[in-house]
Image 1: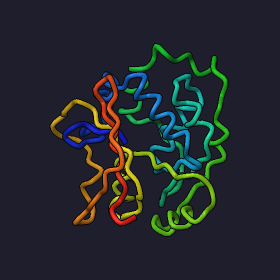
Image 2: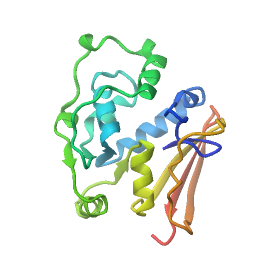
Image 3: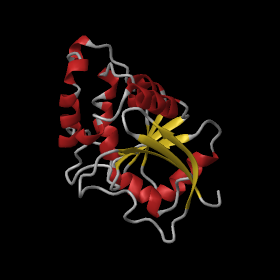
Length: 205
């Protein structure tokens, strides 16, 4: 997850434009390596629908691991496709100069069309996924999905990229965290653009 220094993963309407200025090539490479080492990407319904409308057509550096690694998406209400949210549309507009029209791109969406769609109890489904062999599971926001993972104490390790900007108010992923909620610092990685990656593991794991 990428956060502001005052702890928000998005503005009050999900705005994420604040992260682009300090996401330099070094930070992007680290993020690509981190998500590329996963054996499975998991996310909630809204993020799944947004991402499957974007990454299969993208030429960005993040596209290869985002499209190549298997997916599992969670929803209690089904997976009818939706239009991309305003925040994602704004992010697309910011990066429009690096994109071609969809019809001019090769579609790389097999891992999206073949994604596992999970509708059971979140804790039980995550427990089953953790028992499967393979590499680490990487969870992607939205904020609501990650809040649920944190509230149920299902996350073993946090990779948080903190950007040098404060936005005053917005979406927090730790609002429903159990208390006390202790983390152990594993590593700190500063990037030239000003962002800093903090890696924590859940205390006692």
